[in-house]
Image 1 (cartoon, rainbow, N blue to C red):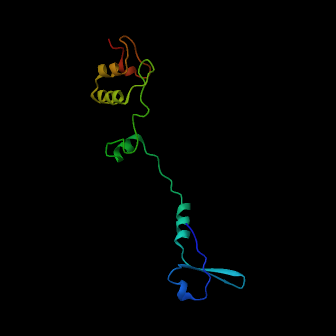
Image 2 (cartoon, rainbow, N blue to C red):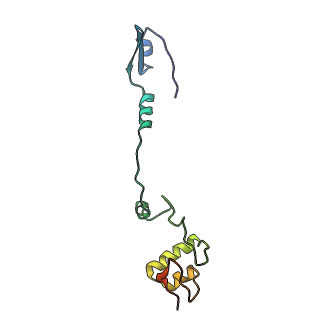
Image 3 (tube, one colour):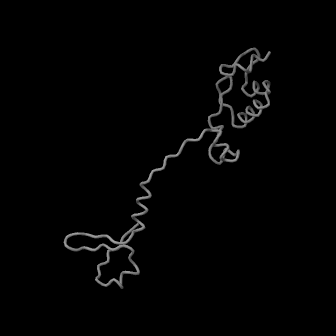
Length: 127
């Protein structure tokens, strides 16, 4: 923003250009009219609090496309050996989980036969 100071006694001269008048008289300043700049500053001060959305709400609001608002595979799971799985593997894991395909889930997480992965006890020992 910026400002222009115009001093005049002729209202016809400045009336078409100036939206705001500062009239100085008797040691006081009287402001008349409105300023877009003053309105913008008042709006800028207004704070809006936004509720944080859950991951499901983000997916729902994005129409199922999580790339629009966030990446649900950003915090990818780790496999049995502590190595992070790729986004593709994480998506395949979710698909296998929906189908109930325990063998595919164990394969993606690289869980050896006879072992139970901590936190994934529902996948069993693979025997």
